[in-house]
Amino acid sequence: MSLQSLLQSRVATALIAAGIDPALAVVTPAADTRFGDYQTNAAMVAAKSLKKNPREVAAAIVAHLQVGDLSEVPQIAGAGFINFKILDAALSDAVNAVRLDDRLGVVPVADPKTILIDFSSPNVAKPMHVGHIRSTILGDSLTGIARQLGHHVITDNHIGDWGTQFGKVIYGWKHFLNREALEKAPIEELVRLYREVNALEESNPAIKETVRGELVKLQQGDEENLSIWNQAVAYSWKEFERLYGLLEITFDERLGESFYNDALGPLVERLLTKGIAELSEGAVCIFFRDIPALEDKPCLIRKGDGGYLYATTDLATLEYRQERWKPDAVWYVTGAPQQLHFHQVFAAAQRLGITSDLRHVAFGSILGEDRKMMKTRSGENVELGGLLHEAMERALSVVVEKNRDLPDAERHEIARIIGLGAVKYADLMQHRLTDYVFSWEKMLSFQGNTAPYLQNAYVRIRSIFRKAAESGVSTEENTIVIQAPAERALALQLLQFGEVLTAVLDDQRPNLLCLYLFELANAFHSFYEACPILKSEGDIRSSRLALAEVTARVLKTGLGLLGISVPERM
Ligand code: ARG
Image (cartoon, rainbow, N blue to C red; front, side, top):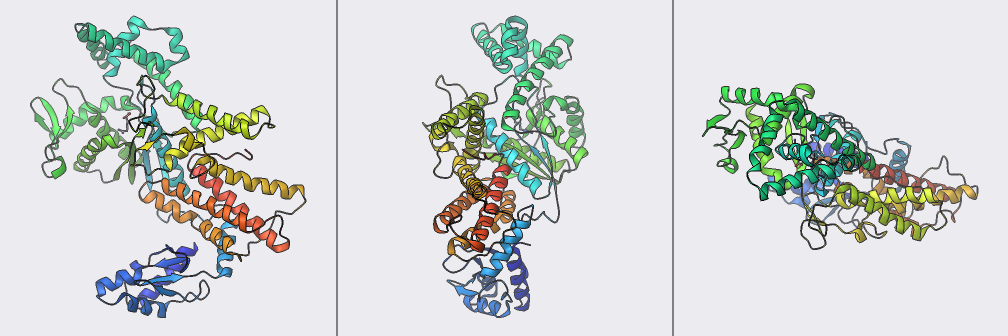
């Protein structure tokens, strides 16, 4: 049990003794560390409902508190906060326990949930652009964190492999395909076909019917068109896989939209029979007359011409997921513009009797330096592959500058780790709903809340250990004994790792983990400045080495949960 939960349970016991609801026992790290290390506002909350003076309620609670083994006498501060200053001995014990724990103090949840995370989900024959990068990076880190806490997670890449774009792609394939280009850069070639046909339609509107005819033929199962579609999907996957390989991201399932094609017709019929959906001017809709926000926004599930929609597929997908995995929760990691779509799908799902906790994990846009949606100079969407390569190239020039004597292969590997880490971290450190400005300079800086700064903190610790080994200092079997203020601050920060992961999952916000790691690195730097490690001796040196070692492990594990690696030197 963490020190925080231990205090929490002691507070709960005291609340019961004072005749107060123990659910109010919430302990958090102190906001103002001058008064203590942890605090609870239980007295203030209780005083409100009891209509009593909060400081008096606090005094009554403190009278029942038994925390002598953990903290100095609890102090009442401000409007009724109860503050705890942890004893050096208790703090040492707690941080030693984290050091000896393979899980670094992260306690698995008592009731693991089955969570299906739907993320990345790019579209076939369209480039994976920076909008998909947020989904991919966020989804992957949420997956890692949920698994670390003991949840059962299924990841599903719901790619857009069926849609109206295929009429154009097939027409283009039949008339202007360049095989060589397709082999070399498949998505680029598919996009070229798509654009070529778009332009053709504009100059010659009569062609539109023929292009649409290709789509209808595909939907009716025409052999030639199906084979073209199959190839287009396979070629796109090849390129997606290359990017996922680069990002070191894998999926449990890759069930694209097309997987649900056969389920759409029967689903719509069933919704009609059950009275959940209605015929409306030849189309089929689900109305939400009882939901104010959706009152005038029915969900269209079959068009007048018989075509199905994005929402129809999502409902069929949900039914399939219910049947196969019975998930407690389904998280959809997609951009904020899809809010209405998911609101409708979730409302419809409820009518279908689906009770899973459905969440749209929405996120904002990535902006260019001009604060508009990020585009290339020629006004096109920035393509993810190019972006990642640029990140590695830019990181390489930084690494070369710093390490002229490292072998070439190692410099490239370090540049890969720094470049990809920088892009991922710059995204994850933002509150997911904010739009942020993409800045190479900022994300690759070794100063501030960036991946290179955190990776550098890790590398610094590793170099201390290399130096220790060179001078024959033992680095095994050390025990932490907390004494100096900078040691206290670092130890307290180390103890929060598990709590932070839980907080991340509450609202799907990996930025809380980023902030935590940044503060951990800062606490380590303050400790490093104030407390000599290799220059000290005996037990003090052992203790400080051990403290540094746990810090390195938490940094590495925490960054790992964000999908970011660390180099051993840089
Ligand atoms: N392919 C969609 C897009 O690029 C995202 C799909 C998200 N998942 C879902 N089940 N709707 O916008």
